[in-house]
Length: 176
Image 1 (cartoon, rainbow, N blue to C red):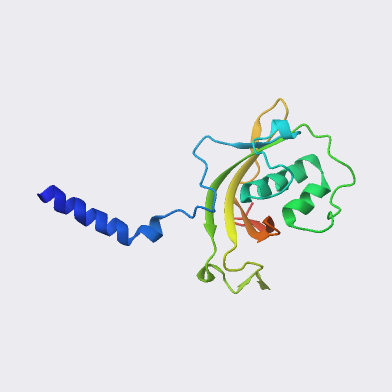
Image 2 (tube, one colour):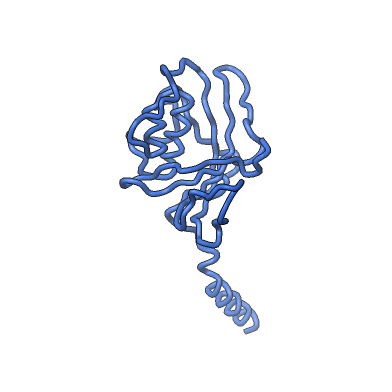
């Protein structure tokens, strides 16, 4: 009988805290330790299959990393939700490197999460934006992989035209 009451008490406590414990289904869950997503020189060498449009937050991150790895401005425009390529690259990159990244956190911003200013500037964040924390490393074709930063990069994404766009990114600690 005592076990029944303990179980009933636990279940009622769990039910009361359910909203706090539930994971937002629209957010990517953190990757398990040891799982790395890959952006390679070609789509066949990459882990995400995004079919040319950033329909999910992960595809948007994939386009962002692919843009810089391959030096393809059109992919930057897609990831950043721009109408025109930003003009970052004169020609595609011939690099044979690859990028590995893993999701370590994800959250939907609430009004209380948004400070009024940051470094004396207003923030571009809005209630409902999504922040995804990512750790990354760059790997040479035949050499080791090297972590670029020691702390996660935080990407802020916003829904856009039936998909997502990156509106801001920063290093979590700001010291890398």
